[in-house]
Amino acid sequence: MTTLAAKANARRVKAPAQKPDALALTYHRLMLMMLVFAGVTALIVGRLMFLQLSTDRGGSGAAVNPLLPARADLVDRNGVTLASTISGWSIGVHPKKLIGNRAELALKLAALMPERSAAEYQRMLHSKKTFVYLKRRALPELVTAVNALGEPGIAFDREPERLYPNLGLAAHIIGYTNLDGRGEAGMERALDARLIREDMRDKPVALSLDSKVQHALEAELLGAMTKFSAVGAAGIIMDIHTGEIMAMTSLPELNPNAPGKGSDDQRFNRATLGVYELGSTFKPFTVAMAMDDGHVKSLGQMYPCPGALKAGRFSITDTHPFGRNCSVAEIMKESSNIGTAQIAAQIGGARQKSYLEQMAFLEPVSVELKERGRPLSPGANWGEIATMTVGFGHGIAVTPLHLATGYATLLNGGIWRPATLLKVDKNRPAPKGRRVFSEDTSYKMRALLRLVVTHGTGKKADAPGYRIGGKTGSAEKYHNRSLLVTTFAGVFPMDDPRYVIVAMLDEPKGISETHGFRTAGWNVAGVVSKTISRIAPVLGVVPDSRRDANLAEVLPYVQAEKKH
Image 1 (tube, rainbow, N blue to C red):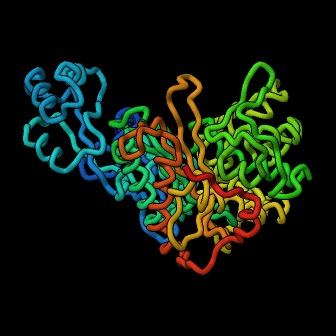
Image 2 (cartoon, rainbow, N blue to C red):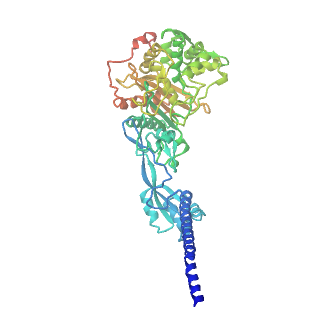
């Protein structure tokens, strides 16, 4: 009895010591289960993240792709939407989830989306990737048609899509985005960082453009380009006091909603990227340089204007030879190469180059766009002959926008300012710029350039009441001298200059209406007249036949034309 009782007591004494061991075992098991659960959760999350990164999509047909950045709108100076972001469709495929016949499916996809062949679609359907895009920026009707194929391996997603509601209007200024939602060209590219900033996406960026002015410029240039069978065209309208570009175009036109369907020529920006010899449009700069340096003291100053001028082993000739002495006013009126070359020689190469540098003619044009061409100049060969030819616009190639900023400098009182595609207002004032020409020289150029339109080579540029002044220019292309680039650069109204207009046709052809002539006075000058007649009221320029530049300052120095 005593022994049995002792054993029972011993068991009762040991039992409490075993209880902590059981609790510890349970605790360890629970911890193990939690670690397993956390590991599985981590694997699931990791897999989801991998799928997201490797497929460029969220995997849900109703979700917007978070990898594509949202962008702020672009609007014109009056708030008209030029570029906006909407929710678009994308079509893709999970090759490993396909259940139908891939060859048959490829044929059906090629019929619905003919931009790829059936063979290309078949390769995509056999891809070893988890997901492949078949179509980005798909139209709803295409989504419906592809969905009707009934293939569960095909997926549809919503994602941000950039929309340009005005189609090709100002396409080269606005630009476009790539499929990853980043700026590819134009202001979309130039302002890319600003447009995708999270704190700025709900704040539209106002450009300097006026949609109405832009439309008029494009319509008139396109009409002339078609009429004269030109291969391209460019045009610019600019506020001469702020540098704001009110309109700028390059033709042939491009639809930024489908830039990939455009040709390289359509995507090329002739206004800021193309550099051209712009011919006689340079002559006013030469005269202004000579005025400022004191070589030309009067618009009646005379120069010998023979039938030809020897320059080294070359001869400089005129389209309308004087065969006598001629005044500065006549040199400009009849666009004399011979007279301008002599004025340029007086200035000298060093001073000529200095003036062109001050107007930023020897560097890529100053504007926000990344598409900017580098000018061509005589460089180290800037001798006397080069100085004379540059004086009348040959041997130097710049963009049409360079020319526009130059004419703004010439007529706004002599101050150079960079061009801008952003609206100038109290929050973003125009830059102060730098002085290039004196106010007196700038004032005298008004009557001189008005004379070209009223009595000279630019008569077809005139528009009743709007007091247009400017200069024609026709230059042979360097690679093929039988082809011309024709340009008119001008300012209006000339009694109180406010706007520059530059219009250019690339390789225009002669027609019966122009008697076969292809020069600027016969084709592009008319574009200027029609465009200004349309846009002047929009810009607040009122026609007034009682006002004009003071032609009495130049007409006494022009001999009466001989009647034939």
